[in-house]
Length: 75
Image (cartoon, rainbow, N blue to C red; front, side):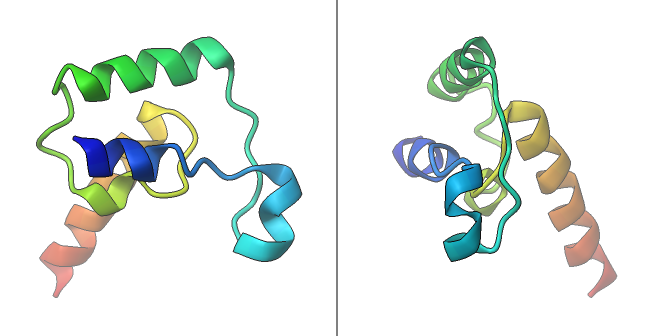
């Protein structure tokens, strides 16, 4: 879970867009806290670590995990 939290906290900030290439996102504090708690509670242990990188809130992570699963199925 620690690695997932580390990746999750790499949320794409607008000011860093020039450096990261990821479009900046505005995420409400309460959404970040809720998402963080869900990760700590193990609710998303089934999702791959890579889905947590540079996402907004946990809903974005879930969507990314679904995209990754489709990509893996297509190979």
